[in-house]
Image 1 (spheres, rainbow, N blue to C red):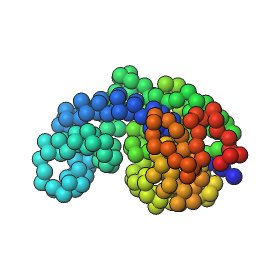
Image 2: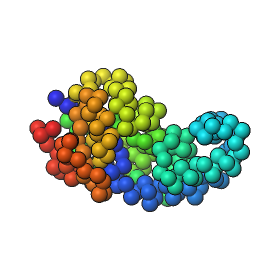
Image 3: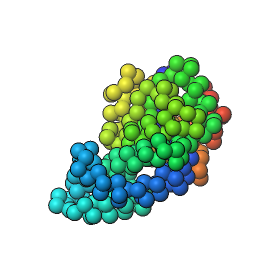
Image 4: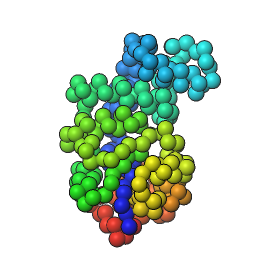
Length: 227
C-alpha cells in the first residue's frame, strides 16, 4: 500500500523547458554580478570554497570560480554549490515577479488529491531545497508549499544512486515499499526500485522511455491499483 509519494520536479510535475529556457538563462545572466557583489557573505563564501574543492584548485581566483560555474550551467551539470547559488539568484527573480514556477495542471490536481487523501508528499530534485521551495512558493497556482511534508536535494546523494533513496527512506516514517517515486528519468527510477521503492514513470517532454516501470503520460491516467 502506498502511504507516501516522493516526486521529482523537472519533467514530472513541471516542464523541463521551464528550467532550461527560463531558470537556467536567468541564473547564467545574473550569476557573475551576484557572486562578485556577495563574495564576503558567509553563505556565498561557502559555495565558492565548495567550487574550489570540486575542481581541486584551493587557490583558484574568483573569476575562475565564476567561469567554472557558468561552464557547469552550459553543461547542465548537477553540482551542489552551483545548485545552491542558482537557488539564491532565482529567489530574486521570483520575488520581483520576473517569472512564476510552472506546474502542469494535471500534476497540481494530482498533488492536491493525494494530499487531501492523506498521503505524505515529498520532493527529491537535483535543484537545491531552496530552489524547490521558491518554485512552489511562487508557482502558477500560488504558494503550494503546504502540500509537501519535506524536501530533498543532492545533499542526500545523486539521483541515480540507490543509496540516495535509502537515505531518504531513513529520514521519513515509512518503509521503502510504502513509498512511490515519480520521475521521468529511467536511471533515477532504476535506482529507486533497487532501494525498494515503488516507481512510476512520467512520459513527458520526449524523455527516454522504459517498460521496466509502470508509466503514464498524464496524472489523469494515474491508477494506484495498477502500480
